[in-house]
Structure formats: C-alpha cells, structure tokens
Length: 64
Image 1 (tube, rainbow, N blue to C red):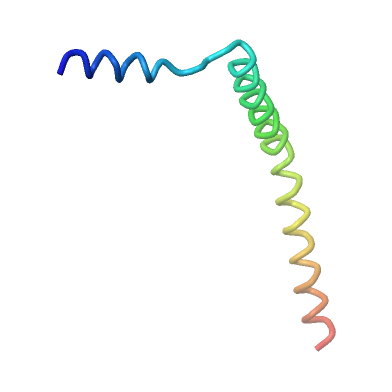
Image 2: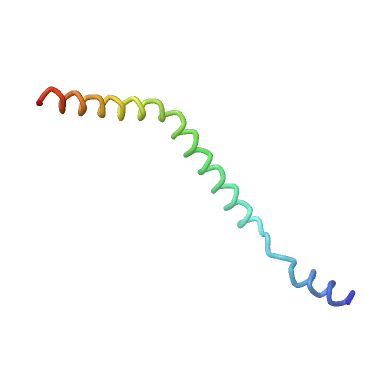
C-alpha cells in the first residue's frame, strides 16, 4: 500500500516550467486589463444605450 502511494505521487509530479508559469501569469494580467477597461467604460456605454432607447421610445410616440 505504501509503495503504491509513493508510485502515485511520483507519477503525479506534474510539469511546471518557467514558460508555463509565465504564460499563466500573462493570461491573468490580460484578463485583469480587460476587466479594468470594461469597468472604466461601462458608465458611458450604459448612458449611450439609455439615450438610444429613450430616443426610440420618443420617436415611436411622436409618430402616432
């Protein structure tokens, strides 16, 4: 039993190299940058969409 556990742990050592860790960190940084950009622009986007809908509703009622 003890040898089986040792063999399992030895087999599950994994392969973490500098390149794979650097790629993971790069992906996390890119995702963080995207989140920051979206959060900074969300107010402007919501305002533009709101104005568009209000304009469409106003046009709809002014025609009829």
